[in-house]
Structures are given as C-alpha cells and as structure tokens.
Image 1 (spheres, helix red, strand yellow):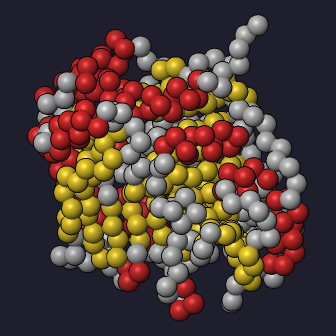
Image 2: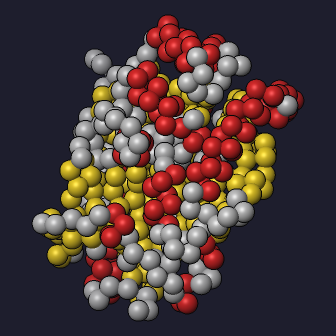
Length: 447
C-alpha cells in the first residue's frame, strides 16, 4: 500500500513545539534517532504490560481505543515483511515503536521485583511525522489518512496546553554516600569470591513532581544533544530519553550492529583540561579492561542468533565526546540468521550487557539484591522496528521516568576489581549532574 504524503502546513519546526500540541494523542512518541527525527501517534494497535498483566488495545475511532479480549504474544504481534518501496528509506517508515523496561527484560532470566508502572509498550504505527529537508512531512497508509492529517493540523494550529513540570522538592539520591560505598564493597566481595567480573552498580535519584515531563523536554534535549533522545507517553506514565548509547541497530540485509559504552570521564570548559581528561580515559587500562569484558559479553549475545563466523569487533576503545562527559565506545557487527525474527534477537539480548555486567545472569541477580529498588525503564531500551525488520534501539541511560507523581533518574557505572569507590561514586554525578541541576531549577519554592 502506498503512503499518503503531505508537507506539514505549519511554521513550527521544533519537535518539541509539535509534541506540545499533540500532547493529548494516544501513544504519542518521539525518536530523535541520530538526527532522523520522527513523531508518531495513534497506533492502530498496541501491546502494553503492567505488573505481569498483558493487554492488547486497538483503535476503534480517531484517538479512541478498546481492549481486545485475547492479547497476542509479542512475536505474534510483531510481523515483518520485505518491501521494495522502502529499500532506500532512512529512519522510521512505518512499523513498531515502543520500549522495554529493564525490569521486563531482566524478568526473562531472573526473579525480579518490578516497578508498578508499565514495563513494556509496543505500538503498530502507520501515521507519523518525519523531519526531512528542513520541513516536517506527514505520512500515513491508513484509509482515513487525509482526515488524520487535518486533525493533526488542527491541533498544531492551537496553542499548547501542557501542564508545566514542577518538583515538590529537590531531586535527591535515594542512597546516602555510606550506603553507596557499602553496596560497592559488597560488589567487590562478590568479585573476589568469583561470582562475577563486573557489576553495573547504579543509584536512583527521586522527587515528587507535578505536571508533565514533556513541558521540560526541550531544555533537557538542548542541554544534552543526545543522539538517541526520545519521549513516550502512556496515560500516567512518561519517559524522557537523553541517551547517548545505541543498543542494537538492525540494518538492511539482516546486518546488526551494537555500540556498548564502558568508560567515562568528565568534560571541562578549559580545552587543555578537557584534552587531559579525554587522554586519561583513552589510556586507562582499567576502562579498557571493563570495556572489553562487555564486548565479549555482547559478542556472545549476538552470536546466539547470528550467522556462524559473522560476529566481528569493528571498533575498540574509541572515545566519543558528549556535552557533559567523554565515553569509551566499541562496536560489534554481525549477520542475523535468515530464520530469526528480529524481535526475537532483541528480546534475547536485553537487558544490554553494558548496564548489567558479566557474567550477565549472575550480575543481574546481584543488582537485584543490592540496588534496593526496581530500575523501571532505566537501562531498558526505546526504539523501533520498521515493517521490513530494520530498526534501531537505544540503551535508556541519562533518562527520566515519571509515574503518577513520582519522578526518577538513575546513574551508575561498571565496578571491577580495579575500581576505586570514591571515583565510581563521583562518576554517578559526572554523568547526570547537569541534568540534575537543571531539574532542580524547577522546584516550587515554599512560601
């Protein structure tokens, strides 16, 4: 079926301005996708899971939905087919968009205490906006495409009405520093006992908040310039991604690529000091050892469904610089076996090795024991699959989640036998201090 395509008749060019006006649409989602921005809405159907209860919901009228009595499994729901019409298309061009929380992903392998908020969502989207050639275009292959376009245009021409986010108190770490150091020491004991080589130990920063995360999205995205930024809203749950990390990219001809991040140093305004920090990371034997452990883990994860001999480490220990930190990044590629559903590959590899540890299952058990609260979507994945099986999924680090009036952000890092407790504690703050400082400017002053 061919798409209805129409240049959006509006002077608005920022994704934030459009999202703010489409705020009431079911399944509203935004993916920056490495400068291939997409805004999608009104999925024809979606699956959502909350506290082990799976629901399948279908659209019956514009922005009206009903629950189906017998939900499909994920693999039944997610069907792929080759299309000659999209052979050269970049980014999203119709398919499935959603997220998988860390809780949902880890629960495939270990017993976990899951967060009460939704732990996965996957919608089938056939109507969306894409930013191309300095303008937004509307695409849809639905029968009511022209009607949907007019409804979208009507909303875009109305003023935004998002409730502004305000914090009731400062967003603060749930752990005190001694509590973090105690958990660090316990990780070291597990490593010495031979349980694991590395654990990704993280801590939560929380606040009570009113209003919408979306109202502050533009400032957070401008602060971080994250290549895998995004936003998703479901009733009383919002997810705002400022992630720098790709999990898996599913390319044409069943090629797959992952780019794990392991190793972090702070940025500095002074160019000379910033270069020293970058060089220190580049030459750090500790960070290289940590990085290569995760490369080996991900090679194994990809190898389960990859063609024999196709798994290759194409880049090792590259330094990438983001607004607040330098990161050490490696890259692994492989060819997916022809009989494998890409969704099957994604689910088996989640949660990502860079945010669990090695060996992976034992690392997740230790994380569950020590961290003291469910991660929710943090360290899960947000992304998409096109109908042809291509797609891109991030790792949800540098991300904020809001469920009802609870706002949560996490940070941490990989702990090895060579890790220094004070340095690892500081790394948590290096990663999110700029985001945290900005968040805390939105605290409501008490009179």
